[in-house]
Image 1: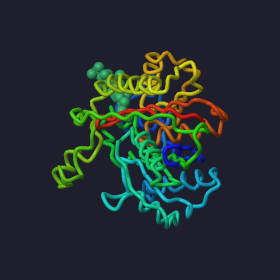
Image 2 (image 1 turned 30 degrees about the vertical axis):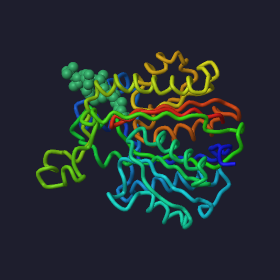
Image 3 (image 1 turned 90 degrees about the vertical axis):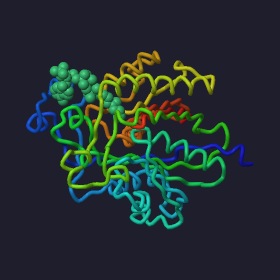
Length: 330
Ligand code: UT7
């Protein structure tokens, strides 16, 4: 009975490029300091993809691990979703490049762009398609190479954004087993200008003048974004509790988007969730946009911070603005 199908995360994986970019390295590029970056963002270092790597290559490494942990082969997949705002190319989708490298011939493939909220949007799409019977085994990847779209003279952004990938395999399960309990998505396109890469699309094609002005890089009003990120993530989390009748006391782990330690702490405070129940790895990886949550989720699983039966909350906020939450029973 289609109505009784629920969705379960059956495997996780992640990949971080080898090259480490420390705050000391950034001190040499731009007027900043290790102390400022640590106190204002919580970031100590981040990863940078090799020139030869594209976003799908990072996604591939994470996907291979997720498939292995799920005990599945690429040919078992019937859907590949890649959440990214830094795709390999404008077309075809990064998911198609990934499908080819994996040899997942039976899988439909598409990208999903909700910027830093992409993974939570992706969980919602995969969960909906699986519950509707439109897909069975779904690979959901969050992968980004943000360092290709950074203005290295803008100290407000170049210290934050980084590269990485995380992946999950999602599959049908019976009601009452570990499952995606509820998801909540939001967007406010009126705020598009506060965080964006203005050029490279149809609105502003890449002309020499556009490139000269650096419009092919991330532009952000950090302060406004900060405030709305806290408000949005807290609101989406509260909706998840309201929809399920569960509370923060039932929660084992909160995995927020890793944008800034102060955003994470302020959101946890609003939700009255102690920091001991919050997953934080921004110190090592910075903000990898759609990849932060699946990377943190994989780390939490590998470190035994998530056990069977645990209640896990995911919360994200990003360009658009977009924001959302997902509540999982592990
Ligand atoms: O992932 C999607 C969502 N993205 C986010 O959520 C990011 C949200 N925003 C932030 O994380 C923070 O706003 C930033 C880290 C970007 C900036 O921190 P802030 O505490 O909001 O700083 P600010 O923009 O209010 O700037 C305070 C001062 C300014 O100097 P003046 O004007 O007071 O002299 C900045 O120029 O800090 C200066 N500043 C820096 N100083 C040293 C900004 N960036 C830097 C830097 N190093 N890297």
